[in-house]
Length: 117
Image: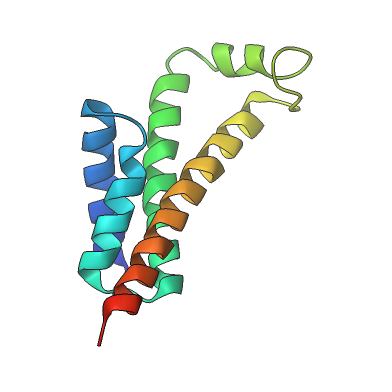
């Protein structure tokens, strides 16, 4: 339960800032939130990963469900990406976003640990 607050803050702030500024703000938000909450490196990674993965899952589903998965299915298969179906593309997107947020959160936790007395 201690990690629930940073996860919610990361998802909320990263969503707003990536909408207004650029997609890479997810890394900056994960880094800053992890430093401010003084999390352990493992908890920092998990908070960043889960927060950003949930955010990107929401974005992907919000954009993909209304168009009945047409774009995702056209990108996979013999087309642009060699994946079996559109759901794998969504899973790959969520994992990639989660890794970016997780590594930024882990970096924040390591930096916090390095400068702590």
